[in-house]
Amino acid sequence: IAGITQAPTSQILAAGRRMTLRCTQDMRHNAMYWYRQDLGLGLRLIHYSNTAGTTGKGEVPDGYSVSRANTDDFPLTLASAVPSQTSVYFCASSEGLAGDTQYFGPGTRLTVL
Amino acid sequence: GQNIDQPTEMTATEGAIVQINCTYQTSGFNGLFWYQQHAGEAPTFLSYNVLDGLEEKGRFSSFLSRSKGYSYLLLKELQMKDSASYLCAVLDSNYQLIWGAGTKLIIKP
Image (cartoon, rainbow over all chains, first blue to last red; front, side, top):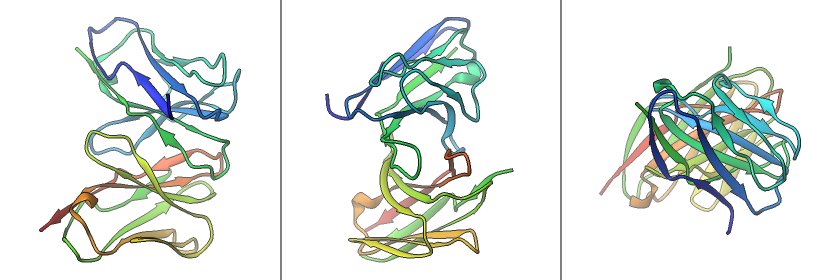
């Protein structure tokens, strides 16, 4: 592994189903982030984690939850998917917070029907 | 509220120069980033400005004026592979990145 990986690459999901998007980084970065990207809008922060064991809410956290049990993994869970959660989801990481470059995973394209 | 403005789309000719502007209004400022994003791919880092002035990196340069809430990305000697979206993002007072919607740059031969 080099950098950040995300799984699955794409997924079609029925409304009401539970779904976990996986994210793993091998750069030993402290901070990790989940964004969603929708057409015509900028990337929007869902949740973030400054370091293993801590998480925080971003701009659009409702309907999503995260955990950070260790440095490498930062899964995003949709407890009960709704069509408005159809989006491309990007996981990112950075060494720290202040001015550090964020490195992005390849993204997961999620469609909720 | 927080706002990042950039043009939706620009067209330029191969070999030419293009300037992509970004204006911002945010709660605090801890730096401005430019990222490149090819269609269907992840954003990749281009530049970071925290002080006023011009930062040059090969064919790409980025300028910042904090007093005007303004930045631009200058791309020289355009190549077809530069066709992509260019994202402006500001690190706010909470050290969260606020992203613009991106500028789609179309390069014509």
